Image (spheres, rainbow, N blue to C red):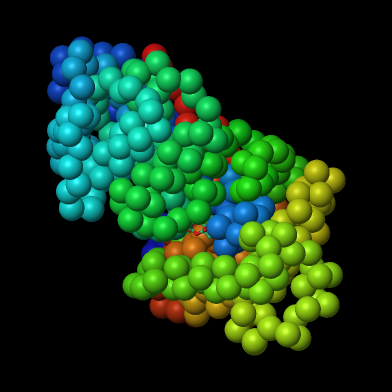
Length: 396
Ligand code: GLA
């Protein structure tokens, strides 16, 4: 087994200082003075509550120790001048005359500026450098992180109140209406409102949040299959439409309003496809609330079983898993140190997440990586994650 180890990329215990120093030094080099501020906004992994956010339901993500960082200073005018250090690309645009460009990192900055101004805020310009270590297109919400980092900067230089839920809605609107991706509210909410050491229960209808500590002695491991599927957006929109059809059948605003008991009483009257889609969402909301109770009791075993149940439901009823995700989850569940595992995020490739014994974290990560590679021939990325704060001003 150990023969496979060299191909797997392990990412363990990220240090904040590396990226903070990088954006600070690059700012100084390019602008000839120290930055007036440094902000960070994290990516996320969702522990349970998948494809529930756009059904007004419950999610339980955590902000991870991988983030987008911006070092900058205010400008006296209404222009944004920025540089992505990772892509080595510059951008410059006037806030009074935002024009859509080709999709790329700049569109997230413009989209947030647009949505803030649509919401009635008066914005000040700024200049700065951007860098991050949230892997792109891996399902760890690098775009929500960029949106929330941008919002944090605008809030700072324009003296706007930082209200995480309001800013998350701004970010979602930027993504939906400027970038054109029809996501729910989860990714922006957790990037805005995360709390170190905790997962966050989010009620996606009221946007109320409840921090829940991770069970003692456990660690969250992100298992990236290193596979990405095309057509994720159209499959995602199709699932949304199927959920809306099911809500209409039940005569409710969203599937959040249907209890498991009510669903079971009515299920025979639904066609097979709609029944399975609805069953996933309704039981997933229930599992998420039970997972929170388990977590509050420190019951990692129960929590893990709910994760396993979530995966089966996403695979069989909601049909958003993939062969590689199923292999990864199976590899994780084979380990004695594993409490539970499931696909996470939109699905169709991307990442799985596992809850494992903290004292076995490294052995767990190695064994799962080897098993996955032996089964699929693909080298995975494995991230042992800690839960961090949401978007914050680190300096300034
Ligand atoms: C993507 C979307 C989220 C959410 C998940 C599925 O990550 O951006 O809003 O719908 O899929 O839970």
